[in-house]
Image 1 (spheres, rainbow, N blue to C red):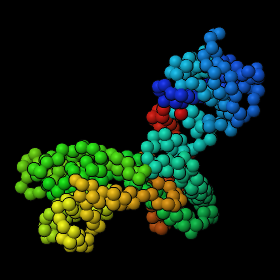
Image 2: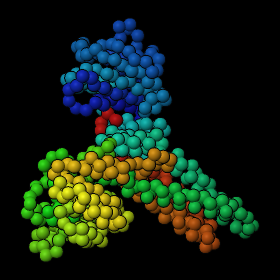
Image 3: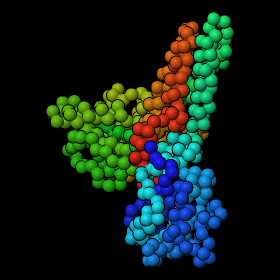
Image 4: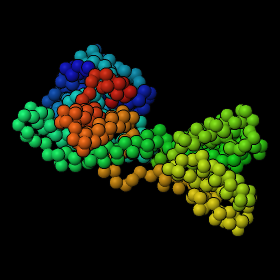
Length: 463
């Protein structure tokens, strides 16, 4: 566990040379240590300055001038870590950064471990554990959707509601256990109707959160979009068009793609993971069949399926190919039928073929080769992946949270079944406490050293 009595320092900007770099110092001796290397023109010490002020001065070590810099002063508890903090903004030279760090260490600071500033914020009660994890997600966010989910979580997300419901669960568990102490007197302390309503409400909330994990996880890792269809329908050309680069080999020869090819691209602030697959057909050779089997595996993982069809085929053939593919796709997944190679078919014929397919699923007409219709396809993908405008409870994107919520949901279900089945108070109380413990692990109300170390070891040094 972290020693909160020490004062830590770290470079917070990425490695390399830049215009400006930031060095953070946090702990009880932060102002004193900073004063040992920082001198302002007025001669006034940082320890004498007001909180929330910024000061210009020079930094020196062992009589050697290192840089001219700005020092920002934050005082406990009104700082990120909840401790006295100094943030030094210096020139971005790697040499200068290292010299200042060495000066701070010689002055009494300890080098910070990965995520130690954020862990201190958690241990000092500035943020809960879910919010601390969201800080890491925010730093790693590369798209608007990832940023929005991380920001919503960092601002409290579902933490406040979970804390409130957990407290109610613990209250009822205590009342049930109190009844056991007065079992001979036949006294009820816990209102069974209120407990039933609470358990049902908790099940609703946990179900909503666990169900959101599919969306949250996809946003974090890239929404999986599988490009599937018959050989030579233009799937690889479509992948190249979506990525704006020649990622996949294309050929007029059928069966060119034998394995899945994946790559990611951001559209409208959302990360998509496009997967080009082997064409599906009967009578394929051994190696090609292995590729087709992998196509079926990818279809199971997909959130969106782009059923790519050769528009030069007859309406009957197109319908048959689409139906065959839809049989392999879970009905819960979104499928878009793409009439590709539209540049080779006249508009009247194309319109008729599109009408024939529309009853089966949503349909778009495109030409991956000429990029006709690609803007409409990208717009529809972004719409399908859009986050709801109202994130009242939040979206779960963290696997640890999902597993804890799933376990809590199972315990709540057992408690409700026990309540309806008139099981003993001891068993019901046990399940309620189990649910409360699982929920507490999300926010850090219950967290051991191993869990904390595992979470914060993935943070960058300086955060």
